[in-house]
Image (cartoon, rainbow over all chains, first blue to last red; front, side):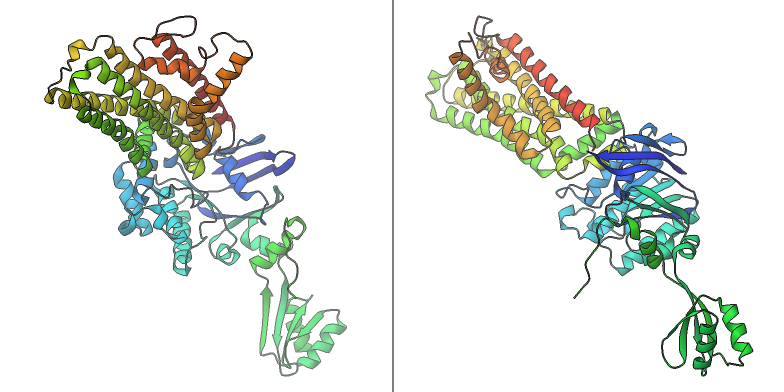
Length: 303
Length: 252
């Protein structure tokens, strides 16, 4: 389990992370979300002691990272796939990492095989694609078979097969009881693999909850109705104060009443229904709504 | 600590530039020595002359070894591998001590190998051409060979210290090379103009290079061989201490 308590990091007078507290639990994938510049990467660096926090602490199973003996056995972290010497081979990169924590060279070969880089392990990293570097970084994470894994944008540069692979790996590792904190801008992927979310903006906690709760709280909800007598139903719904948006002659979206209420109203007016379904907005919609007030950079409209 | 040393050793020898620099560091004085031994009148060169040639050319070796020392840490900052390094070994002091040990050992071993090769091959060529180069005639020149090996170890350490402090490979190398070539000359000249007596005596590189000069005596304008070397070591250790403090307190 990871416990972050009152973490604060300032660069000059600007607060990158401000009194941030959250927990990351075992046996689940916890998504770490926030707009660009919200402090996700800084938080992760502070958690690992790479950036010196001005206040607060991060504990890994009750211990600060700096006090972990041979940390690769306990925490595997990938902050950036580019943190490799381009002139060194992938295998040698893993060898020095393994040696630093007393891991045998056999673990290097096993990790390379796990991420599918055995054949290119002896090639210099500068010949790797971004996706291959991500895989190499993940091999480094898996070296010590840690119980806690921290990944910053691990899907960057991966092809669809790679993205699916990493999703499957993380879900599998979580099912084995590991603690996983992963940041990503691919919200559709996050929706598929994360159980919990920590959402931050401008260095502060916005929400920590399950994905379902987050979407339920911030996402849009409506009822989709299909009927040959949609017009009759629209009048009845509007008379009851519902907001109705026709999609075509027979299909409408209704905001306000629940699906059950729409169904009962249709029965009262003897309107035949071909479809009646509760719709919920995506994680992306919920995220944008939750972080609308803390977006650091906002794009202008396309003309 | 053993794990950290092993890890840093893998890093040091898996970067091609370090191997290239080490080869040049050995090859350059060796080529000069061989050419000199082949072309010079063999009777005009005895053991002390040969040692003078070896210690003179090996200053280049020392500087190249200093570059290896500097790039062993600046490369980490340049490619951001310092982050996985400190993530794998959170006790930063352990990493820095391991790097310093390896830097000094590599500096001393490469320099010693170069000195042995140059003297051995040079004396063999000269003796083969009818000269009379005998180790027994080397006299206090032997202390110069030991001194220049120590000098290489200290320059390597200085390079590492500058690397920690400056973090940029080109800037650290520029300071390491330009300091003795340009800065000390300018500072000494300015101090002389300002009326300071014996201004070069306390300039670190100027003092340290006495390690390769067996005739350097402690006097009004020189610290001598041993004291000069010790003074250079103290200055290099001070640079390392400041660099280590900077690396341990700043964000990685």
